Length: 115
Length: 112
Image (cartoon, rainbow over all chains, first blue to last red; front, top):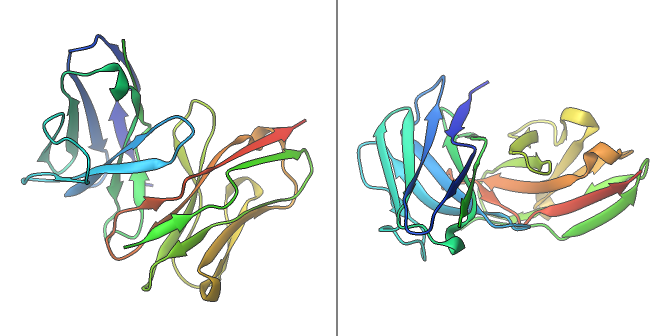
């Protein structure tokens, strides 16, 4: 089946630094990818939709200047958490829809801890 | 807009007990429905999915779910749970927006 690879799986960074998370579709092309955030004991909340070759679409309440999304190719989307703060600590998950968008495939997730 | 509601937030069972987790969605059109499991410290894994056809779908690890269109429900069931089923379970719907929407999740704890 289709595979989405997310890297890194865990990252610890100092407050004020930036962190880049990569999401790759390994055996299919994804013109669209979704970025979710999951707080402990809570559901996945959609942050933004990444669009290849154009600007990302952010959900209400998500700071686009803080969470920079780049979808430079049909197999790679990146999420950069800029000037990270402890409250940005969370589990970030990317997802790419299948051809025909009948289902979505998820990356392994990235556990971000900002100290 | 589509939405998903999971009524059981926390479920505690003993091994061999039967499980049913509720999931209701709201969306007027055709939907694809999913159940995902997230074991402690791990990523999401697909348990089962419904696109069309037989409303009773069977997934991995002995799980099954029944799609009842009239009730907008897609409840997850397992006849006999095991300690290893302890995890977080998420129901998700994919409707017209083609963006998966997740329910809040149900935390299942199975005592040995």
